[in-house]
Length: 292
Image (cartoon, rainbow, N blue to C red):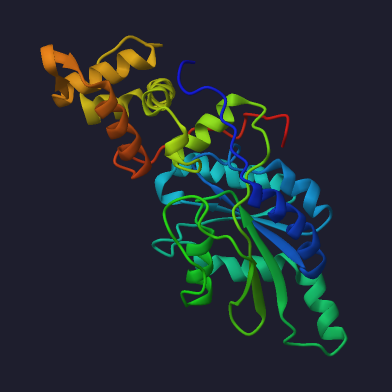
């Protein structure tokens, strides 16, 4: 596939974050990992499994409102087969958020029973909330706690410090900065993270990135591109050809009648990320990645 080459982005503060997480794990009862429901495999940090060890884990498939609902359900079943609790959410609209606390109580039922046996009813459960940058952690924590405790912005790398936040009398959440892993062994993983905005756009070539996304969408959801852009191209068409077709259909032309592929690239990325192309998932549960 054409498109962006290998993407590597591991700011220094993320190395520090990993060390801090190793310490904080000793203080929590379980770990909640937010994944992007559009790319559950690529947004799953392989470091988390080794860091967490035997700690109970719950997966939140966030941004489910932007993902293919049938595939989201298949992903949820896959995680459950792996022994992980799994909840699908859309934190912006609060859909699914109410299912979080019951899922936590079910996940930690044995610990709650031990608390009751020791007369410690009401003792708070402690959860660490983790995830890659820009996956919606801060928005989720704000929703579940009912207050704007965590800073939320639609760009990666905003949450830097660690903070404990009460989500009711019996649940404490530890917010952590978003963490990417040091090296994307599979360049396609880096590209998929970039498609959804988890990697800062200013380190990427927009045209190359959009060309890769166009190829992937043309393979997975050609009808959506035809409906949105009136696109007409042969199966397996290269990304640059798809962007040129998009530009001409939208009238994005520059001097001499040449297609403005840069503008077409920006349009495709924005409309994919905002959901204007529909609910699209870029990975299936049958895909595997060695790092996971």
